[in-house]
Amino acid sequence: MELSMERIKVLYVDDEEGNLMAFRASFRREFDIHVALSAADALAWLEQNTAHVVISDQRMPGMTGSEFLSIVKSRWPKAVRLLLTGFSDIQAVVDAINLGGIHAYVTKPWDPTDLKLRIEQAHEVHVLRAQRDRLFDRYRQVFDASGDPIVILDSQGRSVEMNAAARTLLRTEQPLAPGSDLVQYVEDMPSLIRRVRGQREGTTFRNVDVTLRIPGGSTVDCLITATQVGKDAEGRNLYQAMIKDITDRKQQEKYLKKLNKDLDRRVAVRTKELMVALDDLGAFSYSVAHDLRSPLKNIKVMSEHLSSLAAVREDEEERDLSQRIHKGVARLINLVDDLLRFARTDSKAAEFTVSNVSDIMEECIREVAPQPENVRFAFAIPEDAEVIADPSMVKVAVSNLITNAIKFSRNRAEAVIELGAYREEDSDVIYVKDNGVGFDSQKKDQLFGVFKRLHTAAQFEGTGIGLALVDRIMKKHNGLCWAEGAPDQGAAVFLRFPRPAQELLRAG
Image (cartoon, rainbow, N blue to C red; front, side, top):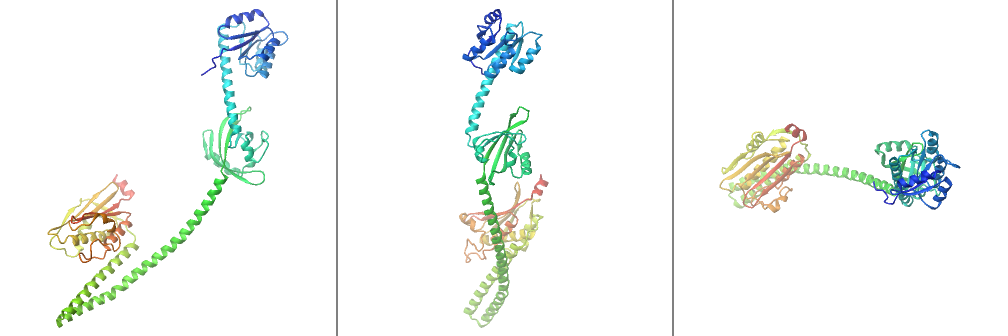
């Protein structure tokens, strides 16, 4: 502990001159000693000088040591007081404690070593009190000058003291009388008590919302942090309450909440209208596609009949026209069928089950139209490979990928189509690779759009819906599809199926 480096000033009062001389001789090297033969002389000296420690003999003519130290306490309270007395004079010690507030007493005859220690201890008390007073002065400056309201309260919510900012907040020009009940300003006291209990951290109650109703009827929204700072003379806890006026912020929050509520309501209405419009559009698209199929089939049949009549009449121009009509109608029918599948997939909910990947791949290969002789399938599928998905939807997706792989690699001398699967940390991946014409990797984001084609219809037939249907199926599984490839170096399409949390736990 850092103490003052100045010499300790000691005033010793005794009516026996021999005792004064002995005291000075014993301690003059260690301390700055001043002596007085009477209490009156000592008081006169204190009027002109200061002492860190005042020591008085108890039995002196005219004024006892207890009475003298009582006067010192009231007029020079910073001086630490000691009493010299005999073993038998216990009442004098009691009086000195009660009246003079002495730090300690020393019995006569005194021991130099013991008395020296008592003086040094008394000086430490003096220094600590001085430090405390300086800290209190600094706190007082902060307390008075703070722009934030500060109130000192007891445990019952009664005011002990408040600064100028607090008086301004409470619309009172004069300090409240000590003991004024601040609870009278609080709205909804039971709710405040619950919030205070929930915001407690040790001896601090942090960021408690309080609404104060101040004189005049207006309200102020506040944020209060209360910290225990000590006890009063009766032993009750004292709290320093720092108050933040957040009325403007609260009003802004209310305004934003109202805006958000209105926005949520408007979004809900617009969403409902949009969903109705989408349902109507889906129903309309399905109806149009379904109704188109019958007349297109009639046109196809009639074009076939017209082609056969042209062959009998050996009219090559009529036969060529009829065949072109037949091919166009067939392409339209395929487009309508793809649109119908796309619409049904969009409206159907996925039903998740565990399916073996090898079984799905083999079934899709059997159901695909007869493959050219130059097509060879290669399998890279672990025996236990599984996906947790809707089996019918997975078959539609894989069938589309196999059909595309055959179509875009049929011009190879040997078309190799690889069907594979592997497991990642939290998902299962299946893929279809080919060694066909490939595609420009910079355009891979267009692959899965409706009617998006990277090759012309003259090169490869198709409606541009197959991969869009695959993308829609993967979205229903919360999965992902992507493609990799390069021109004339083949292509690969990957399907990633996430595994549900319970499956991950079972696997772990």
